[in-house]
Each structure stands twice: as C-alpha cells, then as structure tokens.
Image (cartoon, rainbow, N blue to C red; front, side, top):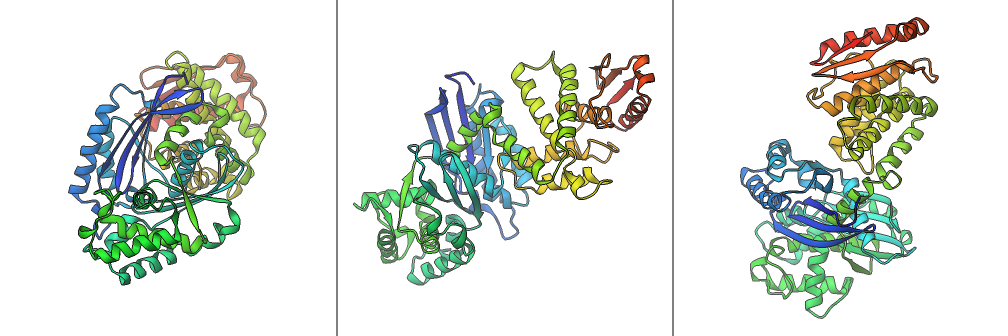
Length: 493
C-alpha cells in the first residue's frame, strides 16, 4: 500500500458508532480524523431481540453522515464492522441491508473473538513495544472482551455477554443508583465472567490495560477528580459518589460526558466485577481500540506475510490433516485457470486478492475428509461456518465455505449468488482444478485454455489431450452438464 493512502475503520458498537480515518506512512497509520456518535443501538433491542425501528433509524442517520465523509474512498481503503448488538439482533438483516447502501461499503458482523483480536491489534500498535505479557480489557455496551497478548500477537481471546448498556437497562432501569443495585449488578457480572478467572488470572499477565468505552469514561472521571489511577480504591470512591447522587440525572461529576451518564452504573459494576474476578489492582489506559485495530488489519491484509487469515487457513488445514501436496496442487491449477479468466480484467492487486482467496479454498477443500469421504464437501462447509477463525468476518468465512461445499457435486445445492461474477469464476476454477488433479498428481495442462463470455465459459481441449487423458476428458464433459443447472454454461472441446 502506497504511503499517503487514507484508511478508514468504522465501528458499529452497541452504544456508539465510530469512524477512524488515518494516513498510511511506512507501516504506521497516523490519525487524520475521528468521528463518534452516540447511537444506543443496543438499547433498541426489544424482548424478542429485534431492533426497534427508532434504533435502526438512529443508526442509519449516523451512517449517512459517515458515508458522506467516506465519499471517494475505495473499497480496499474502508472496513466496517458490527459487534454484539448486531450479533444478537434477529432482524439484523433488515438493518444491514439498508445500512450497506447508506454507508456505501459492506458491513461485517464479526464474532466476539474476532472483535477481541482486533481490539488487541489497536491497543498493541499504539503502545510502546515491549515483551511484557498484557491483559487487555474492553467493556462495551453489550459485551466485554478479554485478551492476553504479547507484542502484536493476541494469544487468548474471549468475548463475554455483559456490558454497560445491557447491565444499565437490567439493574438500573429507571436510573436509580443504590448500593443494592450495584451489588446485584456486580454479582451477576461475576457469574458471567466466572470461567475467566483461570484463563485470565493474575499469573497469566504482567500489565493490565483498559481500552475505550466504559474504562475510558471512568478514567476521565477519576482524572478530573485528581485520581489518575483506575484502581480498586478509585472505583469504590466512584461508586460512593454515584450512590450519594441516588439517580443518574443528579450525578454531578466533572469528566462525565452526557452520552455516558445513562450507562455509567452498568459500566462501573461490570468493571468492578472484572477487577474482582481477575485480581486486578490497577488498569493502565490504552489509546488503541477496535476502530484502530480494524485500520491496522486493513494494512496487514495487503501483505501475504502479515495477513492473519492465511495463518488461520494453514492452522485449520493442519488441524484437520489435509493432504497438503494435493491441496497445493489443486490451488496452483485453480489460480492458473483464474488468471486465464480474469487476468485481462482485474488490476494486479485485485487479481492477487482473488487468487489468494481461491488458494485458501483449495487448501481447505478436503478439510471435511477427516469426518467423511463421501460427504467431505458438506462437512468442510459446516466446519468453516462454525470455526473459530481469526481474521475472518462471518460472511467472508461463509463465502469460503460455499467454495468448499461447491468444489464437487451438484451445483443446484448451493445457496449462492450466481450473479456474483468473481465467486462464480472462483468456483469454476476450483471445480476444474479438482477434476484435473483427480489422479493426485500434477496434470498436463498443455493446450487447455479457459475463456469467459456473457455467462458462458469455454474450455478448449485439444483432441490429442482428450485421447491421452480419457478419464479427465470424461469428467470435464460431466462438468459441462452440471453447469446447465445454473444461469451459466460451460462448453468443452
């Protein structure tokens, strides 16, 4: 990525939506603009876990303003992610369909562990480099992320369904701040965080950092009161101040912003529970957060060596014992065919991205063989749809699973968008590569040429090649029949 390129990360959180814009400069990203709006999307979930129309409207209006600022950005320069509220919302597709159009860029609903990984990336890139073992805590509106990491590597990640908005609505519903309410909220949060005690206990880290959201808001209040440390003593003092006020409307604390006032009770009770469960004495402030992690991840994705998704794919291949020589062989042939189809149409950067993702599908296309030979493609797709896969958003992982599911067998079984030209090209190339490598040895591709027209593919096969490899030629003719069940056609010969 060229120096001077602008990159943007959009964080659709449960309490606030945030836009981070930075300029790339020799591997670093320097902030040029930051926008934040309190949307309270999480407060708009009803008892059936559906977003209310009013909550969706607030979100759409905010994204319209963000979209205006991002006009002129290319897709490769922007990544937008959504967190716990949209993970929970049953009608999230109703919100996202319009949100995509309004923002002008895709919005990925990321898993809790992926959110945690990205938070750590944002924190680690803005901290001085050190070999210290770090605990990072981020309390959001409806979830709390805990991460153990060292340098730039997030080693243990987890997301817990407890946050400032959810706990404020549940334990301080009318804004009343009482000792009894704080005790109930703290104990309930401890119950959710119970299994974190062993994984994130005091022996697992050297320094604890607090990121963004609730911890940032609490830190601002304590600093304004002359208490610079987020410590047990300071949290007890703050709780006393809130109880003395009796109601959120009567709280008068310097440093408390209006957008944080309604959720300060829930946020503080969760923070106290984290301190208790993990035996934390003091949290240090961290400048980085999810939005910065998203921006740095955009930068990493441009380089094969730093793209965490490549590491994830390799880990899955190893875990499920794939035949690496065969997977590598299929990937090489599939990428060669894709270059024939798209080489003249794509930029070198776009073609490299398409090839990389096709290579991942090839490496994982037999991942389900560990479970069943005959239904390996089905099991492989299921594994990918449900895998813990750092670096991947859920829609991206599902797309990869569709390629694995479709690498053999009938095409009509795929619940796929056959108007997505890139996906169809990748799918065809993977299927052809599997056929050409069916003998599990390097195929002879001499004279084979794949071309694309208007929803039509043509695979030119020399007559002498077909006579030399009759089984391959037979399988290719059957493949042409399979494509007759789709909006596309394949002609061979």
